Image (tube, rainbow, N blue to C red; front, side, top):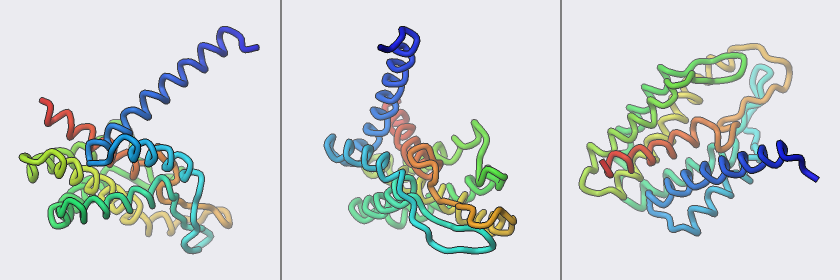
Length: 204
């Protein structure tokens, strides 16, 4: 039997998870996926967030990529760019978000991090840029925001800081995983938050 305090904690956790799930699902619906597809993407990201693929070894590091936290968002970004024919507009958005992300992230003994609230700047920049270049088409703007945010965070944080990270001397076989925090990783969240901000900007 659960005690009242344990039951209360369980209920609060369930409510928070449902709210978080609903926000992410809404973001994927904004970019054009239907409800079933959005739910599949969210739960697929959570499940695949437990899977990491090693890419290469260097200087004691094992560099890898998380499927749910990075690989899936990258695939979705490319798909949305092709489907909505926004490739060239997204390229400029990626450059802007990459620059901002690089300047507000740094390498620490916990990996590549960004302090709160500075990690909100990349998704906000992606949203504002998308609205400016696709103000008459909400669906395209959401796709631009997601793709620019996701790819910009990946390049600005993980790619641009990779040389600094690899220059450190960790314990042998230390893992450095792109998107390693799964759905709580900056790569995943930047795209989702960018779309949510995008929706709020359109509603206002």
